[in-house]
Image (cartoon, rainbow, N blue to C red):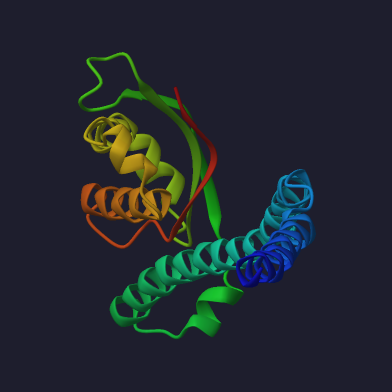
Length: 196
């Protein structure tokens, strides 16, 4: 009889423990699809918002700053050289009338491309020299050859680097001035720059 009481006393406790565990499983188990659905909907939305409103504006701002910085660096270096050699300040140079000359459709094969890739440029050069047009037309073949030599020495990798166009611009100005034996060319502007 004492044994039966012990069994009876033990039985409700075991059943109660089983019932408690069952309740815990039901309350903590829930539906496993809800967190998955939330994750599948929430993560793409958060990713889109971060890219659209955080990363793209920052990258755009940095690229604009880098482009403006490299353009101003290229102009500042050329301007400093003009001021030092010509002996007058930038205010006087800015007030002078500049003469323009166009080089159109200059095509050169890129280095390392087995002549399958080319660069086509058209540009305008400017000078304040009154005899500028005569000097350019007298040495046009030499200047075109300088341009072709410089452009054909460039590879596709060189052209993909930041500031490549500014580097080509300054190299062409230096090559032209060396050929013309003086600081004749003041500025060069590309109006066509095609890599194919």
